[in-house]
Image 1 (cartoon, rainbow, N blue to C red):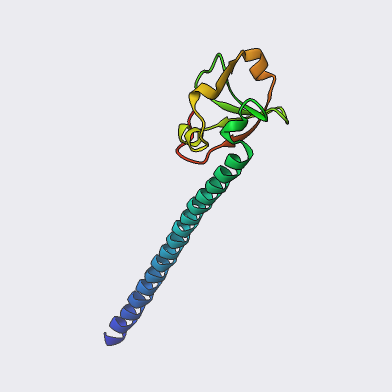
Image 2: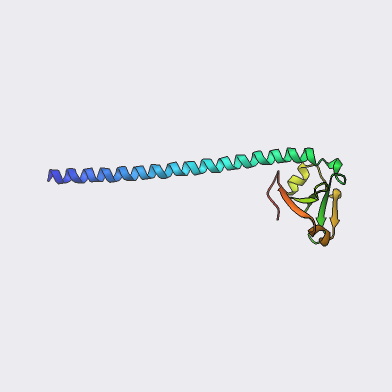
Length: 134
């Protein structure tokens, strides 16, 4: 009788050890996933900050109408693009916060007709601050 109880106790301990090990494995995987998400968020913040500095240097407000033009289509007012006139590529300014961070105001935006707007190649999306607008 004692041998049977001893064998069941050993089997029970092995089962609990396996369960504990599996639980620790899942906890470790969860920790890695959380760390990777945190890292991606920080990389995104870093990229946005660098993009903001690059855009401020390349497209300062005083060059609007010279090396670039802020434009919007007459069919989609409020969706503002930066047209690099040297490369003839329009870049979507994806948030109002980005627009303001770059030092622009709405009086600088030129409305153009849909045919002209659609004929311009679309480039990158500029997003430095805030959530992307639709």
